[in-house]
Length: 427
Image (cartoon, rainbow, N blue to C red; front, side, top):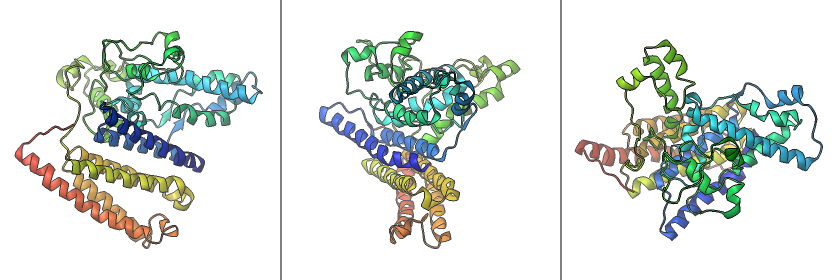
């Protein structure tokens, strides 16, 4: 837990810096692919995911260590060879897990968040799930287990394999020559994120594009067909916590509403997007039929609101870095409480980004809880006073100020516009 937190202390500033660099580069070139609110939503999703991972809030049904212990036929000796095999095995496993996440209704829920952005940029790479609590597909690491690749090697290589999938989420890199035949490139992954019928459910590879070519899921980026990004049932929210559970909630409701017992059972394992015919007729949901004819989600936002949302995210980043660097100081018993506060903070300010007047209620709840925690700890914030004596007072002042600023936006912009019936859209 602590070791992973230390790794993220190094990795997260690099990812954040590259996201901002891409935004600056797009502005410089006159080809901006990053919208402020979408970027903040994506970055917030990344925060929720890494917090979940650090806490280890998941269960593995069939552990890799157990497979190695009971099924290994041999043991690879060479250190270079064992790490190479581990990397290839993780990529093979990643291809199949990724593909099944696109093809089966139940498994789509944990992956929909990654595709929910209607932009394609480095920030959207960080849209990762919190809704997956049970790992079912360790079996795809069977080749590595049979060769006796030790579990600690997989544990070391897995984060590197994940981080290596970040760079190709960009529109600023064109085709890459001979590399297009070997690795996943930005052109390949633009296809994967596209709504176009020509591109749907293609290019599931994570590092090597060879798996798609081998198993029949490869699609090249076509010269006259620019990719259009998003999901066919738009999320229509910047709140990453809501997005994480939208699909599973729809499945639950559809299973309840279906008249046929067989439909109630099979809906979970049917192809992604399948709904019982009677439910589809009685409870239609928004679905994009023509990707060339829909408006991207973009509630009205003033420069001041975008700035305030950025400030709110910045505060979450401060909380996050203190979390990663001070796990022992916070104490194991308080980690879930601290993580929950981060989640509540993200929920609150992304509701404001959505122009939901209830955002003020969430903000009062969050800041009231924060002030209570400081009071309960005798004027401290999870041991922060040991590092900076003034820090708990600054945090408390921020909670008070944050409530007032959020109230200002809710009452002077959101409620005013709702009362006037104004619907403004800005880029």
